[in-house]
Image (tube, rainbow, N blue to C red; front, side, top):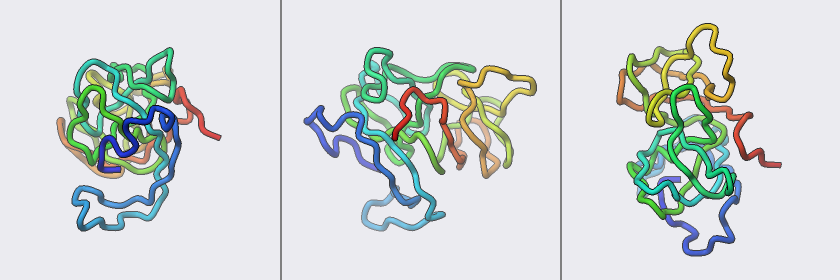
Length: 168
């Protein structure tokens, strides 16, 4: 986590699932332990045609599930993973880690979120408090552990058991 193009240019590594200890990777020279919980991520290529901001929800290409990112999650739509929040922006064509389970920071959409809220996808890969009565399971991503305002990152325990890629 915290780096792009770690295994580039070998496309044979795409789809590799790895577990990382929950650490603060924002300073590679001084990585600090956070919760110690495991984070599960899959190695993918950004093939969306544009840069992707860290902490946003992403969808895989339908023809390359678990291998290539096709774009951002939309409002109440499918979320296959969270763009590595320790990389501020991923260029198109970059090789990146997409978090599919465990604690991570997600980008908050309009209205902000409150600690303990269940979150769902919003516009442009952001996340908002789950709407009461929402029955579309694909938009649900997990529970936030902190209060945050719009455009901030909020620590969230993600469990995308409904993601397009289900590792063994």
